[in-house]
Length: 465
Figure 1 (tube, rainbow, N blue to C red):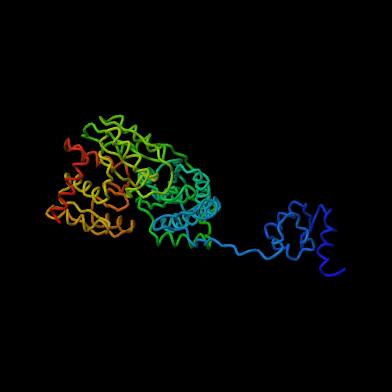
Figure 2 (figure 1 turned 180 degrees about the vertical axis):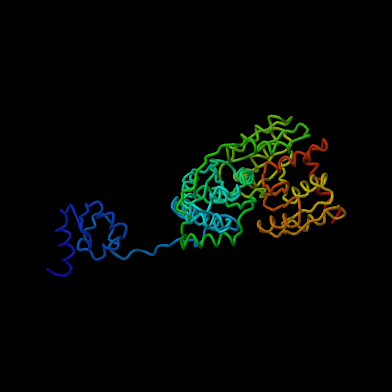
């Protein structure tokens, strides 16, 4: 028999074979799996004695696999101020647990020494004579957690909570909520930090979380970078005690804190677009006591730019405003912080125009106020403020810098170019509903339509220029 006849002979002898054993494996596989491995360029098929028994698989299966384009793997899940990743591919429950442990370790480093010493489980540390503050500290850093309405969020928050509790952190679990509610409950309860599981700002397949310190300020990129290193290296347990878990579903105090800003309003018809179910329920309860009318537009969960006039969701809200002859419309992103407005004519109000309106309404009660403004808005706002008894401070483009200057300069507002506004009263708060209350107040100063109010603000800016 010639060499050319060898493959034909092998095919003939294996034609009736029903089971196969791959090189180096102990167990046999059926013919269907054998053919599937051949078709998938299984590496062991190259040296297998049955490699010529390819059935109906094209002959190229027996050759080397073709070049496969590999997708670049991200080495970090960090954005400028949050953690984001594709659900399951980059961030799942087990990885979330590691983040929860690293987050807890960073909080234990900030605890008073009595709490750090309690980590050794020395029963003599907290005595009957210990102060109430010492007893609270000894219980561990309290963390307020919640999650958004994405299908992946309950799974991720489960891992986070397990990691926090394993490290001895008591957890106050708000369940499905929004980032402003997390910030409110964090400060109301005197907790050490807050965590909100969300994929806001990304496509529906993404997940992640935002971290807040005890003053409801977002963690800086530097702090998140250190935490990510701890996730990769691993952290040791600070205590052998498991942290407590307290489920809480309470919105009454949060809504009461907002209701005080909705006052002295003229009857206005408002259209609100949102991709959540929680936000419309909160707004309906707030508007029930107002002379205003509220209409909701349900939007999909997706990545969007609120200040892109071509955005399809903005067009939907604008069309609803114009068709229904409403006074204004707004779109609130799923985190409850980013917000954009459209006028009664359906025109998008720019971030510069929103900044001027909010500064003008704030100046009515604070004549010599200071305002922290993002660098991209600074030139326009500075010109517009010329001759007014107010000061604009350049806050750069970093959220951490904006909020730090808000505190250090004793300012009353910090304005970002992406539709977020931080108010500084008793506490620091970033809430789209609070921004809406201020815009409604600006419109209630006269009977002028929103289009004319924005035009007046723009005309004032042009004259100052």
